[in-house]
Image 1 (cartoon, rainbow, N blue to C red):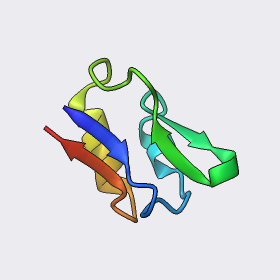
Image 2: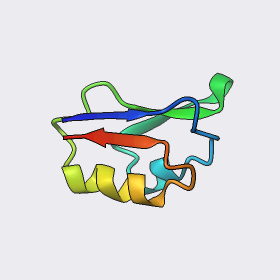
Image 3: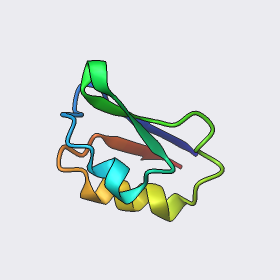
Length: 64
């Protein structure tokens, strides 16, 4: 499985951090979120799916 945040879509709402703080981190200087290194494989798929579903920009991409 591969999960990533599309930097072209992310607008810095940071709702992913609200729903999955164990999976995402925020880069202040770029005003966007990224997947924490090592989170894929350690964090449950449903956590990523919830974050993706709640992203208003649909910036979280999950490839199974």
